[in-house]
Length: 184
Image (cartoon, rainbow, N blue to C red; front, top):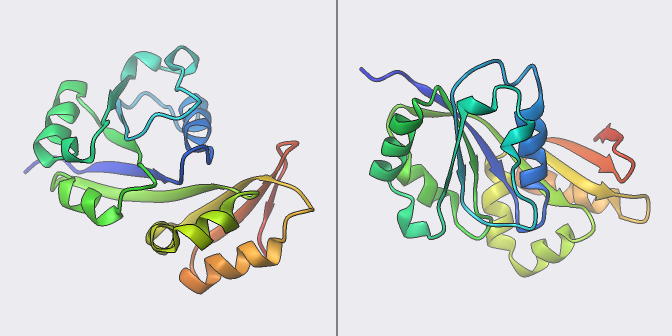
């Protein structure tokens, strides 16, 4: 029987801060304790991961999936095998439904944590224009991380949208100065 590989799933739309959030985790000494990590990038944003910054960067392998059709069990299994992955981090394309990922994951991959980043200033627009995709991501997530938050943004509206979809998710608001406030 194959060893179970934990998967950390990062959700959000383009320019929502997924890559930055992943970069912070990959630079965190507590998170990066030597495990061989496969990073699967499913979209190209403005920011790129910088492996030179990682503690144990030689243990990080990055693969890019540019088309949804590439995201298959054989592709992911082979990438994990080549990387000798002990865990996986996936930056998932916000325009793809999670069911597609679920069908592609190898049997021995187990979702360990699902996190969603969202630009607090544009989230309401995404919810209005792409409600099905927003619902798809929030319904599965454990943490919604609203970044670029400031007091001009209606916090109760963000809270209400998330709670209408997922009552269990933790909600965090990151201010532009980097301070983080948990939702009440």
